[in-house]
Amino acid sequence: MALQDRTHSRIVTALKIVLPLSALALLSTIFLFSRNSDPTSDIPFSDRMIDRAEQQVVTAPYFSGTTADGSTLSISARSARPDAATDSGALIDGLQARISVNNGGTLTMRADNADFDLAGDNAFFSGDVKIVSSTGYRVTTQGLDTALSRIDLRSRGPVEALGPAGAFTAGRLEITVTGTDRVQMLFTEGVKLIYDPRK
Image 1 (cartoon, rainbow, N blue to C red):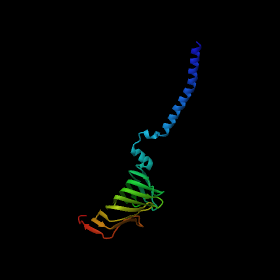
Image 2: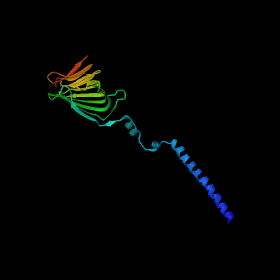
Image 3: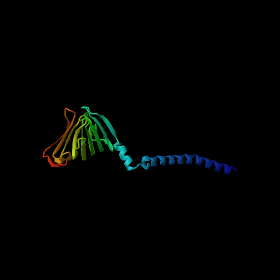
Image 4: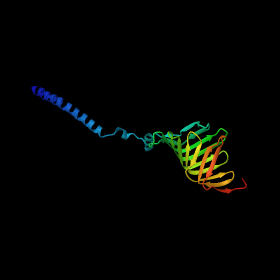
């Protein structure tokens, strides 16, 4: 009986030492392995979601307002994101814009891409840029500078156009508003017209 009591006492004493040490060992392994693992790496985010979160992309943005000369401007796009190169810039994809002047004339524009500089009050349209006026002109170019607060558009290179008189090409195009609130399209630098008498 005395032998059993001694054996029991020894086992209890040993367990009092072994069990806390085992607990410490388990805790240390938990903390050790937790340092080497990234808990967010197992979350199933797609690459597209991560890219959009990093780039702060806005899908289907829309803006409407009035320019300094009283024309109405509306702009929509497929997507927009901040321009990392400037503090007040925005990069636009799939741009569509409509300008309505006071006399009822309109201009509609489409561009693959646009780079807006809000602080500089200008934008650059690039890619396949198309302009349609309510007077019957359809213009295509690859680069267009425009003001944001007024109607002042200038192509960076040659343009191709269809109009009431026929088809023509020009080295440059300028679009402004005259004193009578009419949209004026000025084609310069080597204008070549293919006249169609039926029009």
